[in-house]
Length: 518
Image 1 (cartoon, rainbow, N blue to C red):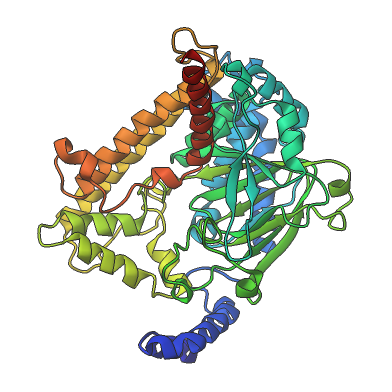
Image 2 (tube, one colour; image 1 turned 135 degrees about the vertical axis):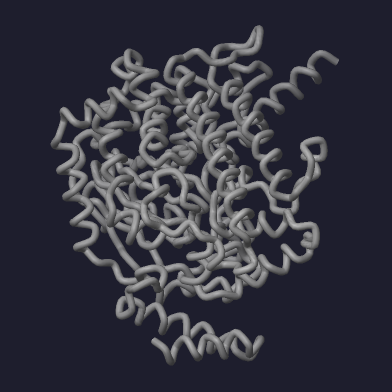
């Protein structure tokens, strides 16, 4: 390993001539990573005992039913929604859901060795998760609300994963724009159907988000993915900005997860959005970085850190269950990067607030970070010691990244990050509360649906994010709309896809109405 590291240092200074050597060094570092386990970044060989140990502790926690019930009663969710939770359809076991997330969030090994460092599989069949949300539940949700979905598509081998709207308006009325289950079924023949940020729309899924937020103390959302059986490619290789918990509720799906490639292999690409939009992430790039290959069945779960490439399929030869029914899984995203709650964002904010720092300096810093090795890069982008990580023993110090940071600067930015984290979490919490209760905003004359409710919430969150970025850039609130140097992560979250699709459909209906009036 020391030889590899010296070789990597030489490769970084060799310019374009060192590209091939740099890639070989990265592969060698991946192969030798398990030898040096102390503070060396991500673990790169799947270790079954880690997954089994965590799964056993989760099951032990859930077996203590009385304790889980007490935790629910004392939680934000339990205190606010004591009566509503018992009436949800499908049935929602609040004690089990909160107990599940609490068992993970309070697990010392998870916080120290797993969170944002390696994937883990929970192969124990979790009873509360099996058949929790199925195609019949989705059909009921579509019939009673104005839901929107997108379908994954890959236009060519030179591009990544794009999303296309599911269904088209059938007339000029709002009702004509409503998506039907037939639209979903037709889209499934062509690719995976995705309901982004479904927690804002579906009460039972809003409750899941609340349980995750209560446990992790970070903002959380939930996406839902449906794939027909026999799909050779459900999702092409890509990475995400969120740390995600994949929860299989119906059917089966194969997951192949890979170690992150070195950012220096493609400095122009964001390591957290590889394989999306115009950026293609090929299996050829990942062939030497395979980490795990697993088929999830109902009741099983998988944790994947942000930035780790993965691809999925429901090929018939993967499992018998995959050949008999569609796969439906829920992805609970715990958001830190999206809302600027990472160590890297904190350091950049400190520098941006200094008078002598310019946007050009910040851009140069961002570019230099992408020249790092995979382990160095992801270490810099780990979440700050907030939420469930506060007081966990993880170092709060940012001086290890930049020795010029003073104690006062660090204290100021950490207080701001903590306040911002709570602001976003509470905004989402209130949205989920209203979704569960059914007490949300509906414009005069419009049918009761969650669409306007989610839009109003996201407008408030975007305003909060703009104000936060303005502060990080040292700009007064009056000039906040111009604060773009550090960039807003909100648009890259799971909220973007579903909301964008909804706007297109509603706008299309409005345009038709105006045309007919003329």
